[in-house]
Image (tube, rainbow, N blue to C red; front, side, top):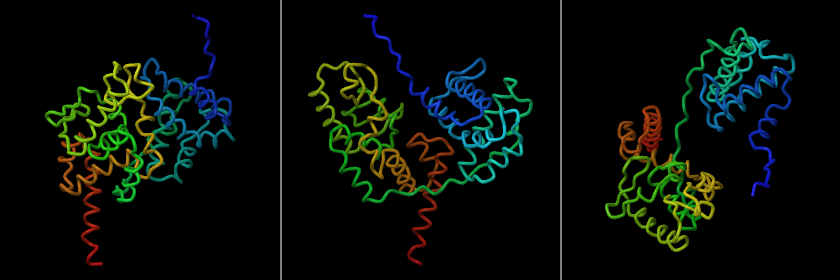
Amino acid sequence: MGIFEDDSEPSFERWLAGRLEGLAPGIRSETERWTRVLRDGGPRSLPRQEGTVWLYLNRVRPALLGWSSRYDHLREVTRADVLTCIKTLHGHQRHDQLVALRALFTWAKRNGLISRNPASRIKVGQYEHAVLQPLVPEQVDRSVAAATTPATRLILTLAAVHAARVAQIATLMLDDVDLGNRRLTIVGRVRPLDDLTLQLLPDWLEHRRRRWPNTANLHLLINNQTVSTTSRASNHWISAAMRAQDATLERLRVDRQLEEAMVKGPDPLHLAEVFGLDEKTAMRYANSARALLEQAAEQPSQ
């Protein structure tokens, strides 16, 4: 009717105001401009995903708070300040903060806010990933017990058996399921249906048909919010049932890929072929599986 005026403040604005609180006025205004360019894009930059924007600002905030006690603008920050800031950090914390600071100062130099980038030529370096650890049976059992509906049982199986990510589960379509030929297509990759998935899929499809017989939504998994639309279910809804468990959907996915590496052998080429992993990720799973197998071989001698 044109009489409703939505004057609610977007959640991003509330979050941004909270993250900028405590910064010196000059540093605050410069950081706010950078954050908005990250989110919205600019003449020479594409917009980033909101999660990336959150990560970058959260990583630079501790350094900016420290500098705000003695500086008014980013142009006063020196290379020594950046080195002092990161010298106490290690591993991914050092990596993430330095990458975020580089992004901030690169943008500031490009826009004429600083004359020299104090974060340039500081090596980010590489850090060793910790060995991935398998889930223990008790953790998996608790997640299985928490899956009490046809939807959650199918979701858990897609993560634990087919190593599907939450977003991949949410975007599955009805056409991706081929019960007759026992095949399931996940992000263009055809996977054979095991007996458990072959049992749970018809259960969910029958439940779906009985509860929402007239829906036009062609996504495999739907709920009360998406049944009257054609959009997919949210990641939050997909992962909700397992969020309080030790064996979350993400950990179940990782455990499945690690199990494959341990059972079939730590071969990154095999992992890349089965799960569509990139080279570095496949190598990490293979290295973790190799380390776990070596530890298991040493146990009897100890």
